Image (cartoon, rainbow over the protein chains, first blue to last red):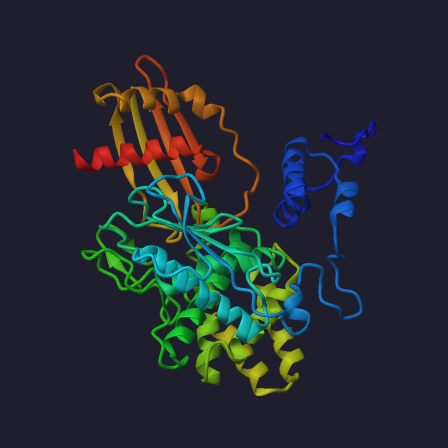
Length: 363
Length: 100
């Protein structure tokens, strides 16, 4: 489908940032169209109205259009459905199905680890936040293990998770609870309205993934916020790498210091914000700042990270409706959520403001 | 023909780059033929990057092709635009170089 017949070029003025959001939030047809129109720079207002199932803006206090149904009330019945595939060292996704929901263990540590990890993430979101799977509507959790050969990465591709095996030198595995929670939480962000994967919004996307990856691990291990080491990807680095994890939420910038990897570049304060064109504007670097804010908030309140702090963070994501949110926008939203949940003068709100102040964001 | 492949991005962001310099003419068959076909500058130039694909923690491949007598051709290609066989070939080349 090409651009609607508009002879007046002034009608073809939908700005790129709107088209990018449509590409991110729309169904396949809409996403493909937005991509074409990003090239053509044409207007797509008619198509947007046609595919929108719910309004994007909140009406009279109702949740915005992309809030999962499970957030608006009690979640539907538990609906965990997993499909674990073996990539067999190739790039094609999803690969060969090796374990479907309810199947016995395969004996393959990667496949069984991904299977169990997916349940831990599902349980966090369902039992603590009332969310039925990543989209809130019980979508099947599809994961591929042994993706590609000696692949030093794990990712969310928009519809599934994929885990490499690592090359044995830099990484030895990606089947680790906080990593699984991280990748799946990218899906939650996507189905909650999205955060554009660049600059500060991209760092927030990354941070949300780390925050809920950490919660998944702590909940599975029965670790309270004050007992946790707050490491993301603990133990996945290679045996000769001088480091303990991919990232530290407790002390950003200290996870590794290695001749091959260099120094963990994460900042813990806005004063050390990294301005770069690499890594989509440092999305994996500057995420250290909101990560540390969440950690500090948990330290102030004690208890479990999926208690008040997790509830505030989750509520904020559901209400944000700003894919281009800055750190300040996000911090403001978290405070608004805390006010809504606990009251304007509550200890929970006071602690949150202090946490943000300590990382250089005064709200 | 000389091909240099480096990577950036991924779940770790910085510091995870792999690099390989491949002298294509010294590759054994069928790796030589596959490389000539899939990493030919014309083939790479035909891979248009989709605008802001969904997903996160993806890798970008920086590929420089130097053909004899020609200026270098440089490509920055997200893995999302590289076909599966091309990604498999890249993995094979990275392994081949690392074992040399």
